[in-house]
Amino acid sequence: QVHIVESGGGLVRPGESLKLSCVLSGFRLDDYPIGWFRRAPGEERVGLACLSDRDGSTYLADSVKGRFTISGDNARATLYLEMKDLKPEDAAFYYCGADIRCGPDISSTGWTFWGQGTQVFVSS
Image (tube, rainbow, N blue to C red; front, side, top):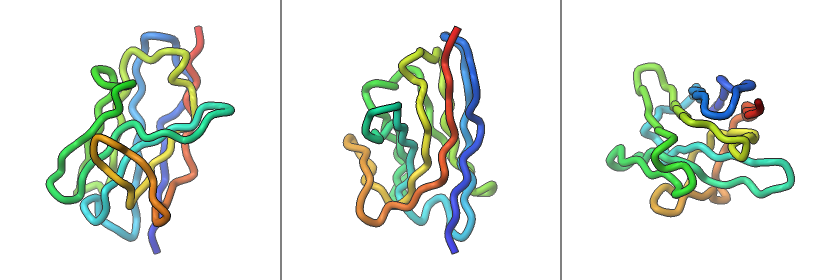
C-alpha cells in the first residue's frame, strides 16, 4: 500500500526559510515522477517542483526559481523542498504528489496520489 506523509510546515516571517519533507512508504522515490504542489486559499493547486523518475532531472516553476530547491534521498525514501526568502504569497497548503507530469509543465494526472499536506504560514 502506498502512502505519503508531508511535514515541516509552520509559521515563518517573510525572508525566512523552511524545509519540507515528504516521506514515502510502499514505493521508491524513483518509481514515479514526484513533486511538490501548493494550494493557497481560494486558488487551484499548482505544481512547484518535481523530480523525474527517468533520469533524476528536476524542474521548478518560474514562480519559485531561485528560491526553492527540490531534492530526494532514496535511502530515506524522502523528498524535500527547501524554501528560501519566503514571501506572504507563499503561504499555502503544500502537498507531495506522485505519478505526476514532470517537466517544464508540472501537473497532476488522473493517477496522481497525494499526501495530506502540510501548511505554511508566512507573516510578520
